[in-house]
Image 1 (cartoon, rainbow, N blue to C red):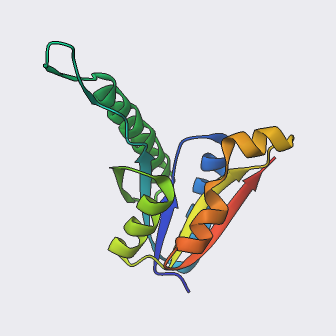
Image 2 (cartoon, rainbow, N blue to C red):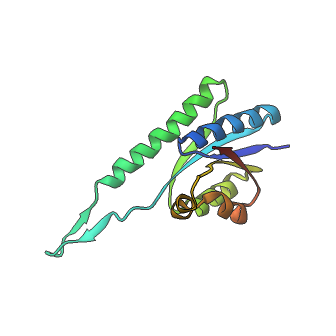
Length: 146
């Protein structure tokens, strides 16, 4: 039985399905539920021709956007009567999700996945799910949408 479930949440259609699936499992097993939203690391500084250092304002905007995605997921769970905690982390998704799962001693990671129709779409987008399975410290449930 699962005691601590981590949902890698991105607010997408497949992420919302994964949220519902993780809620069902958490209620069934009376587990703690945690959400993590992974923001990719952005190039935030660069040296100008005059030698000054400039900071890209979009990092703050992106962090705010990811916090909104996370807060939306937490609100959805709270409105279902299931409080959860969560955090926005910055970095490469597979590495950060696996690290967060270790940090909270998760028994299960839930992640959404959308099947892509063409091989070019699959190649271009890549997939976090298979790589996460290889690096996860616990079981991984991939919630599929078409």
